[in-house]
Image (cartoon, rainbow, N blue to C red; front, side, top):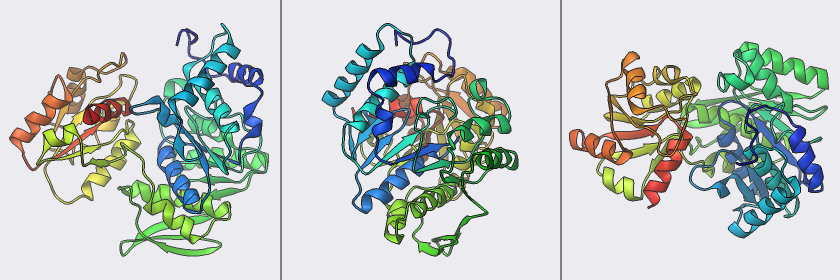
Length: 412
């Protein structure tokens, strides 16, 4: 962090310099599947990994941010990177970088690519950190396939304040002649993606044009030019995961994988803190007999998806514990939840300088029609909700940083 530039600027110069200093590992990776988008990147990546691994493939995976431990970001041939291996690649990158300015994400991305290049595997899954065009992961000249999940408003201070501008940044991962799977998009986002793909001669596999996915009689129905698949519903809850499943299946089919891989993608994927029901741990015991759920979504589209998921759950009093960062569209996120939650207890995110203070979150919640209060800790909020509503569904939400704190507290 001492090397981090004083001003956050999205450029690739620092990444290229360090990659060259460590021998350009980006040129020695197993076939790369590069994933960008606003929402659904991690879930889509997790589904693709489940599908590939079910067929016996060894898969590297890079994701961000981590929840409880940094090691979650780098998965080598299926396993989380060890402390020893992580220390080794970080030290080598730190020495090679010298005193030059470089961001936390840039140097750790190079370390991940170095670890991938030195560990045998069959595929590499790379999730974009921010945007796409100037993201530190966008250094692969010839990926096997690229994927753009739904694009929505987020990180406007870096990516632009319109859907078209943000889509232009996401579309920066599209490479000449490389197939690109595209999830459901707003029309203005799709126009930008299509223009970029057309300029590069990149074949598009777009939702609503080249593939379709729906739910019929509690089954997931996927159809493309190769035919129809009748599969179980995704094990990750929420209608948005049906759409994410479609993108994952489209990618697997483009890679030549069979129906068994597609079924594994929707039935075996695990992605924590995405409408995850916690079943064991200290906080679960504290909440019992109330249910305890965790979700890290933090933008308006995520709020909409979360509200839709809650409406599809069996009826139960639903109480939110919410903490958010001050850089997010708080009211845009919360307004979708006003109609499905009985109350919101706001907390500040421990250890986060950019946290929105609990009283500010509560004030924003009241503005959109939620009954709101504050608590000093998540534990205090859980106890208070359980005392008033023992059979509650308690959902902790609003930030991946809060989700990480909750995971650590629950494991304590």
